[in-house]
Image (cartoon, rainbow, N blue to C red; front, side, top):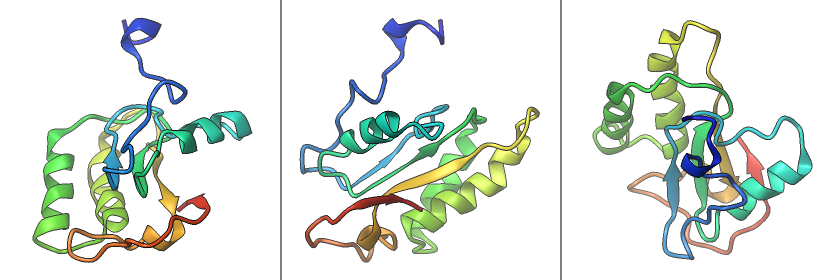
Length: 131
């Protein structure tokens, strides 16, 4: 049923944050895929609604709970930024995928690119960008 619209959320149907949520991590295939299409990119940006960073994949990805555990450990114990922790965890666990590389992506506000659990951006939210 993975291709059935009833069980899939699309970027034009989802909004995160309502100005209450700062960071979103999506361990799901193709959440941040836009294939160079400006309308798809705008739909991704519309999901933010207050979130400063959205982490996810722009390809098929391999779901492994160890990756999420490692990501959490990097955030809490190593005090890494969300961006660095997400990419580090993906580099370690996405290599298991047999059909090519997974594309890990972080999108958000440039001033929030170094956000961590211990240091984060609270200012006004300027133009978003891919990282």
